[in-house]
Length: 267
Ligand code: OOG
Picture 1 (cartoon, protein in one colour):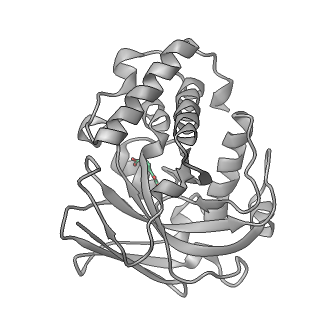
Picture 2 (cartoon, helix red, strand yellow):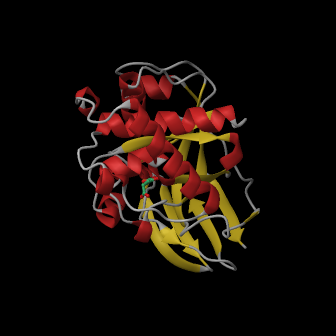
Picture 3 (spheres, rainbow, N blue to C red):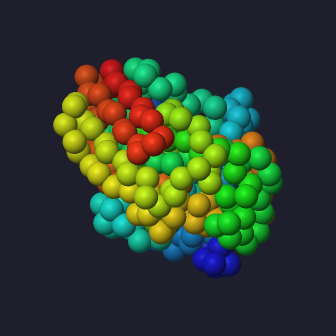
């Protein structure tokens, strides 16, 4: 795994990069890719920056309630030009309820994604299989994720996006909570509507063949970071389709086969 790569930068630089990302996030002001100033940044360094960002937000009172996998489907990889999945953390401050109005003025260039989320009831650690993920899952449910790259033009490389917490910004759990064995998550179809028009369609199998594979990948990355996935985590498996850009006044509805739907509007 790429986290075995040597570190290319010292702790001081990691702290500076985490502050740069946090400031861009806080003031919704884009910055240039971190690799423009740190061209030798490794994947391991990028996760060190992400961890420093997580610690900073925790110090400010945010609580990590789960994680997300990203860049786990071909449509997303093609949209972003990055072909390796990654992970990011989710805090309570990022959560919004279904049917709510989400403000966009505090984001740079928000985009919406439809995902399947897992809620775990056992700790998961190390190298785990899809079956072990499903056995440790209390329920699955639909989720929308609003991503917002802190990088100019929503353009990045893998190292920069991982340091930027994989573009995490807001997330919206919704729809129906169902037992993970109640349906085949590979064949769950999703239709993403933008202002009433169908914008994207897909199915669960787009996500690494099965969304639970994304959770297994995520647990492996956490292991390489020296962490585990605690019981009770909310974990999103990554966008099934390409992401859709939104602006004030827009509405998004994601309809999931047999799992219900989620609507949000943007203001
Ligand atoms: C990176 C994050 C992608 C997903 O679900 O694929 C992501 C990005 O595209 O900005 O969250």
